[in-house]
Amino acid sequence: MKKNVLFISSGGGHLNELLKLSPLFDKYNYHIVTEKNKSTKYLKKEYNKKLSYLVYGTKKLLLIYPFILLINSFISLFYFIKYKPGYIVTTGTHTAGPMCCIAKIFGKKVIYIETLANIHSKTVTGKLIYKFADLFVVQWKSMLEVYPNAVYGGWIF
Image (cartoon, helix red, strand yellow):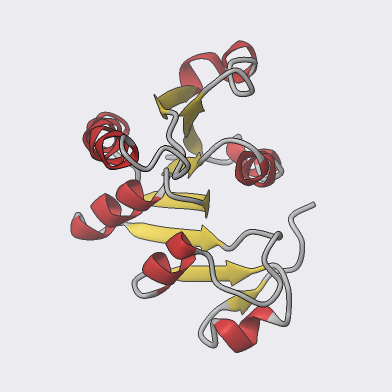
């Protein structure tokens, strides 16, 4: 029986990194979660029922962002219950935070891959998830100084 794995990230570069893991998808009973916006609508054609969306949120909209994060937390809980993942694999960022927290509350495994974009500094979500991730992967050797308990995995690309 294949393990249930939920792959989640925000849109943009984080999603591009996550999709580089697509050769792994068929090894698992997988599901992908990302933000819904113009740049992610094309994925529905390729992944169909294996794809779900969260509300697009950006920290640039400071007044409404906390509400979007709260809404996405409830949507994440719904997806978690619906898809019953044993593992969460994420390349970040804020969109994935609630799902990772939910997974840990329910005793599931979290695999966090810090973005390739950061060479010397932590991301906000990385700081949070590092504290409880079962596997925390960095893509630059220099990031092992920032996250000493991380594993160097090299570039996803």
